[in-house]
Image (cartoon, rainbow, N blue to C red):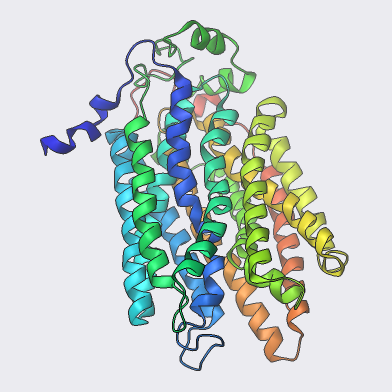
Length: 470
């Protein structure tokens, strides 16, 4: 359709003198919206009382059942990123971001229908499946684009894009509580109206990113490669390209297509490392609101718990930029070593000293979530250093299947171990302790996987300028 021709790749190429600093706001418009997924736990307790109202009735959904909504959304995030990553590289970020906005906003609307009719399958289909596809396409679209704009600082670039996803809950958590409070009446929690409002609102906000995003004119050949034209259109960009790091020079030696990259041991070691890091954090995020209310029963209100979710979102967001930028200085591998070693110690500390004091509990999880977010923001640059830039978006999409697997494993560990322990007489306040020890053990496994990652032999990778398979 001519009306939608502006979505085509050729219509999103940046003109001469276009500032690359106009691209990060487009990424933030998308990621701040889809980052709402991290605040979904705010809905869990109200969703468990849709019929009962003040207290759950026998016909209401269980918390462990509701945990599948978030899990399915994360599963389809990873699957859609893996399946359509190569399509994104072909059609460009603008079209992918538009489809993401339609899926994410539409997922809320179908979810609202599921709530109003109390049909869980509609909620799972809407927010979980359709919304999850929107999450995946929206997540990877700005990342590969910013890596192309910032060849000199890939860690910072991916941090700029991905920190918005971590910060989305900081906006969505209080917004969700405020909307439910506004629409609540004597019979309902205002969930249906809240979902409709957020679906429309997020679609419109994501369209800002669709209109703003641009591709660099030289994106056909990666900057810094033997065959590539200079990326920069301005003096600032030429200067930045001249100061590329050692990792950038190393990455310029190889351009590995996605179908080769995912067959290497390096890819699967990083997959395992990302899986361990994500599993250790995502289970907490999925039940953050309910967890702090149960650990500190009677001391934490629903509003305070929403504040806790918002704080975790802030730390998640800040960690994505701080840690990914730090990785430009100290390297990706040492950065991941810190995530796993320090993270394991902090998880071991939660059941011992964290549960005794609200402030300590919050502080421990604030640091943990900063490294959780940092892992997401650093992995695209890690992949770029190993495999090059030409198909980094598609490779990134493939490795995000680790997020899909973690989206199942993390919430299952938190929800079902909690439920099992409570059914066997363990107090709610202590029902998360075993899970924390398991999370710490997972981080030790991630530490080992990251330690085994080695650079690809140059001879085994395609030289820059060699045609890359689609």
